[in-house]
Image (cartoon, rainbow, N blue to C red; front, side):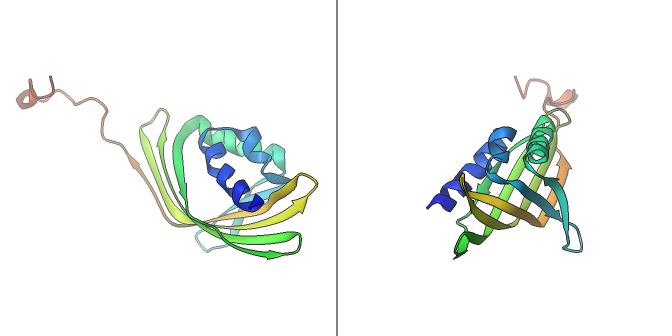
Length: 149
């Protein structure tokens, strides 16, 4: 149940831009990686300070929400592993860009003095789309005059 609680806290902390809270879900030396096109992991952050910075930086330019499915968990003493399907939809804060990601996380956990923590999280996107949003205001089009008022 403690690992499920950890997972339940993961996305809301990231989505709220709580870099400090999100980074504390990891072990002191925890790592976050994203799959490159060939499937190998690219370490994006290592250790709580980098993890916090990664979350803060992302949320300074983009806001969004994750939808995370039930983890498929296996335990081995004070270690655990999970595969977790997810989707993410976000909008750029200034540029009107959208980001949609569908994929899975592979996570490894360790039981520490703080309880269960994420030791390694590997994001494997199946689909990653970015595109411009439609203009927020309609341009001046003579035949639309009065339609939007």
